[in-house]
Length: 465
Image 1 (spheres, one colour):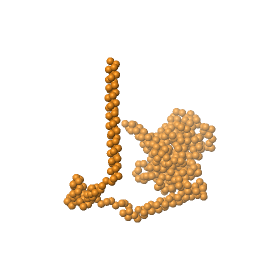
Image 2: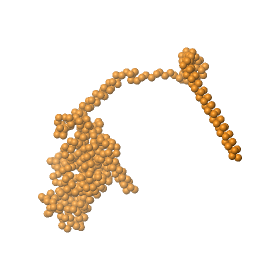
Image 3: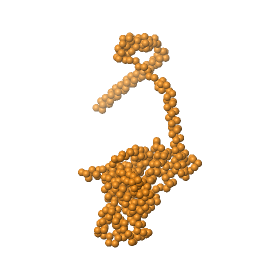
Image 4: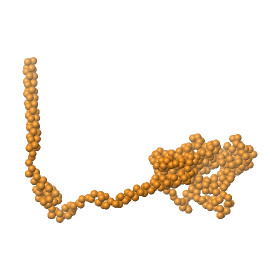
């Protein structure tokens, strides 16, 4: 039963992921209704941020240093709240936010100079910030990474690396790290040249970290993980527009934040294949877009009116500093805001200056019905309407002196038909009488013809006999 529930949750999360990546209707901040993305610009975390409480299970407090130059003293120690990841499917933004917090708020203040130390601490923080299905998925990724390191590097560089040694390296991460931390007499496979043992150790730990991430990327980004970075860059550069009501400064900060997230995306690779060592090395250079591309993202994010004004400036907006570019766009924003306030004030003033009689046409005052006020039935009565056979409610609606029917009947009785009207009626009657005579004549002639035809047929019959 538990397995069925877990499979159902996994299916729902996968369906949510598919809906999140490919939209079929226009959403806030998007230029069109068909957009491919992995982290949404106007996401729920941006529009409706929720402040975490001290006992919030979605976060965990982890101690770290305040300064990398000081030691591990109480005065130099603080607790940092980091997001807890309980599932990886359809949870890209939350996962990347957690990874960014680990790197920037926990590892950076520690000031590690060795990659080996950094990766060991990184793995410890990763294990402390997962729960639920994410814990099992991270464990599986670490197991695959151990198999990769042991089968690709250790087995070629450690004599007689078989049996118990192989089992110890594959069983736990600490067992693998004990072999990776040894003194190396040979530089390593793949014709790589290393300066000393520490350089080769750092290389092995970096390979281990890349192998763990390669095991998690398909779960986090779906089947298209091999081109997730390119899709997100294209989304930021072509498919966005600043939502109405959002400040320019806030929109630019959001773009900068999404650009910094690109560092944690998977490197471009072939479909269905994990990123190779060469692809990881190339990704270190290309993971963050160039400054001109970042400026183009912010320019395309602005409304078309802002873009026209920026293009009409004497100074080239592409060569402006970030502060200058922001200040120019804020000028346009403030001008637009002032114009909108003027228009709104003018509309309110014009609406307030009108009197109540000018706003609408006054309605006619309705008279009460006789049924609601029986006194009206006794006060109002029209004898003319009564004699004409009108209904009771008509007779009791007015007095005889106010009756219009009486005046109209009098005018009809006194008026005489005009001669032209009489002559017209006479002509119509004469035309109809002439037509009737003609029809009667035709019918008589038809009858005579039929009688003559019948008599001739009878005579011909007698002759033949």
